[in-house]
Image: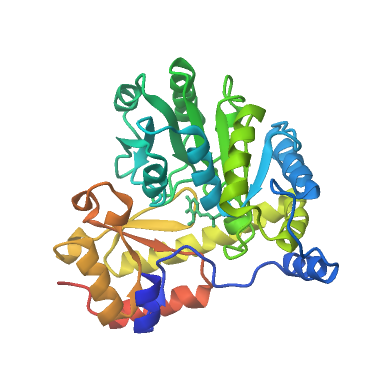
Length: 369
Ligand code: PLP
């Protein structure tokens, strides 16, 4: 969609990357690291000061104690973190439970390691799941469950109670819980992010996948991390070493500055995003979309059935070519295209003027079939 948007000169509210500047302190830290000649291969599982900073942050924010020497692996973004974790832990034929709609990488990641995707539905409009459906999905072949909270694409933030229910099933079935927590600090309306690793019984079986991409607005830096118990980390580090060797050394140094930011940095981030969320919801509602109000992450899932198009892909192509605005067809997030045919996802990690430009396109364009 980003490629189509560029080709058509459309406003791009498709792919989730900020169009505003990264924090100055971070850019300066990266420039300083290059000037200081931190330009060679890092230790494959991450430079020690960054692993220390990651451990410090989890201790400060969640009270989770991580051993930087044995439990943290720095990787090339959450993208590598997820696939390295799955390649390290899932054997061909093992089942992995995934909530649908899901972030689109999880399916190809599972294909790469021969894992079998077992789907549990997040039900609109509030994107909760049926506990009995989830219980039925667990069986003797279940190796892991992937949880993405705050969630892309729905904006759902799983409650502590839901996560405790999932954790209990993981303990009962001896399954891993792999948590993609990349939007941990982007939460609204009093929603609280709970890392599954902090729940009883989960310290040894939760694997945290996270990165600098969203929290520090640097999706192109490709610095992420995986936190897991030593035996799991051992295997994940082996896969990581042969996949990528390591994330860019100077950007890892800049990451130390990032991870040592005071709590107020994250508070500001959420305040800025809530304003953008409200601006986009107002724009989309005025244009006739039915919006699902997110409590976290930086996307608005919408229902497009009122516009009369046969499906989401035709709708988005029309919007790019005729209206000049790009979004992501909902079917990208579902196992079967028909399940997503009434949905389209917009992102709001954009400058207010970009969102205003999208509003102008919607006011001037024709959206109905
Ligand atoms: N996980 C989720 C849920 C995402 O939405 C994204 C990017 O949009 C990623 C992972 C990719 O993260 P990274 O840039 O750290 O590879």
